[in-house]
Image 1 (cartoon, one colour):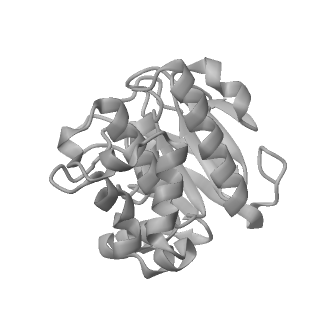
Image 2: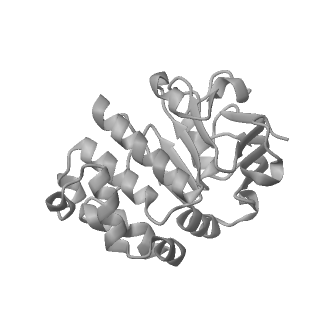
Length: 238
């Protein structure tokens, strides 16, 4: 059983003895003995700036490769996959809302949202009618139709953040990773965003790993964990 009381065989994410350090650094910035995210669980992860939150999400999302330990995501050992296979796995199964958004600036908002379905037949199949799925997400995130035709570079920071969220959610990924996804939103839009995020994850049976420094949001989640409780490194670089 894991810390949340779920069998490990049902875990969406299971870390054992995970270590990672940036090249040239004197020591590791991630040193986690044991951490599990159960299938379908909605977990709120928090910690101060520089504690390693973004680094941990990048490891779980397959953007970075661990130096040591076991990292299983949706039943797959990411440490055994090449960089190209991790990219494919992420495209097919993980919706990632990056802290810096990572939108393609010259593409329209609509084209950015649809990118996962363009690169992953699996996501496209789950989305079904891609334009309709995109329009539904955009409407719920208060992104007007006329805005969807504009290049991402022309959008406000808050609009870009909502486009990044729609991109992560389209095609019902099994795991959603969200790195400070409400930081550019006002209070009202934060609640709209959280309603959509939680509803979409519930509908898809997806697990959600949500990182934020805003502890006021923690009550919307099944469990709240401080990174300092699981990361043995006292002072880490994110």
